[in-house]
Length: 395
Ligand code: USQ
Image 1 (cartoon, helix red, strand yellow):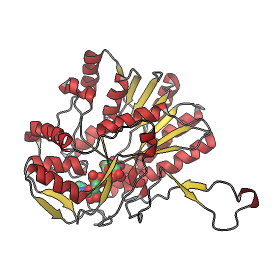
Image 2 (cartoon, helix red, strand yellow):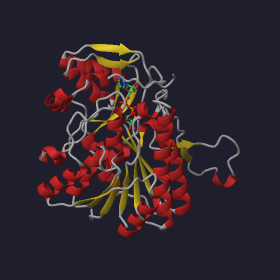
Image 3 (cartoon, helix red, strand yellow):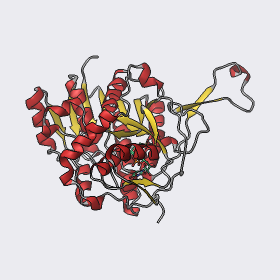
Image 4 (cartoon, protein in one colour):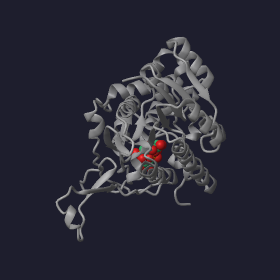
């Protein structure tokens, strides 16, 4: 595809940094907009990424030394500094904006009233600021948002397949005579958030639908599953390009946590029965999906494009069993701190990315071992007191 200027909001985070390097390696001109809030939250929680991450300045300098490609950095709080963001977008007129600038941990969003308020304030304002600016500029910029599979909720779907954002409905009462033979209508799939964090992504969906309708903004919403793994190919060039790796009870996601726990012989923390089934995607596929979404934007006036960005589903118990077998660690069934179904089934339609050419990187022992090797290298940095999930959904 033609290369373009791309703005990555939240480009210092786990998915944002991987995306910045991937798209820069494809020749796009990248501007990272970030206020380093993710690093500040680590500091406030008294935790550190398992992997020692370089400063954002060092990261982009190293990338230039390795690849000869410049990544620009702009420090803006997307949720607050609307004037600076407006100026930046109108001056640079990016072909695309990729929006990761949100607080992304469900347990963090549920810690206290203050954490709930921060998550709502930060996430909802960030999205709305970007939309209002693009509408004001009558912009053609393609906005790609990192949403979550969690907007659908995790109740069982009785064998039904979760569609990509839109559900076909047949009117039950009095279809007008002129559309009786028309195609089935589609509505947005009902949202059912499982945390305040997930709720912000549901609110985002409402805002996207409105701005696509009213201002003809071009928007893609990616309903991403739980990302696992840590490294993408560009990061292997130099230690200073390494990705962050969260294992703590707030930000660590389940499979990466189990791999860490297994590596140090910490009993794997299975919440409840472990019957929760979730969608997963490897970080390498995540950045490839963003590339594919970039190449296939909606037109002006088209409804929001929604893709399910996941490649497979697994039961938490099965993942723990697998990691325990690989590492010899024990499993511990802990009281579930979350308010979620003890067990669910999950069938997801992900044909859009597959049709566009995604070749899924499925969970296998070689990949688990690759993550395990990283963990092994840095395991002296693990603070085991930060492993338990202490944030409770119901106090
Ligand atoms: N779980 C355990 N033990 C643990 C940690 C988690 O059993 O030590 C369980 C949880 O109770 C839950 C499941 O594993 O049932 C997934 O938890 P998670 O922390 O891996 O994932 P989640 O909180 O859903 O959030 C993560 C990302 C979020 C993203 C979401 C995609 O933090 O940004 O949106 O995955 S999804 O889950 O598909 O909604």
